[in-house]
Length: 118
Image (cartoon, rainbow, N blue to C red; front, side, top):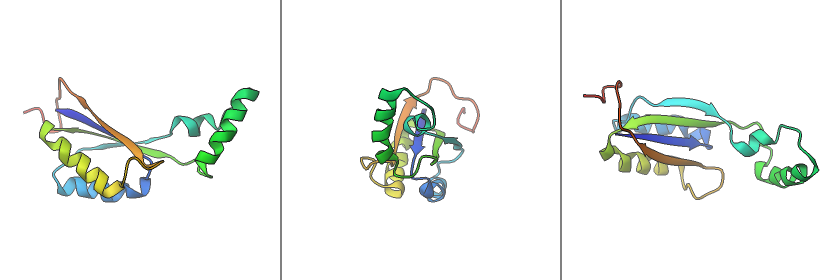
């Protein structure tokens, strides 16, 4: 078993992604609202050096200082990893493009619930 984690910046793709997961037998995801570090730091007061750094980051934010991401967590079988990655790339797009997101899996030693512990 694995935990699939997706931090999705392109939140407009969330519904299509979840529907495609469901069609492919991937179910039971938890979706959390999240904010990236740069966007969070933008809202706090900092010393002069940090302000210069954050000023350069402002270009990266391009007016989206309050934009939220979605963090999707779902437990998958080992044999579903390729499918989940493929679907995510097909629906969301190229993850090497800026402000798309990041995805990864983590091995799980123990799972109970969601019908996966049989």
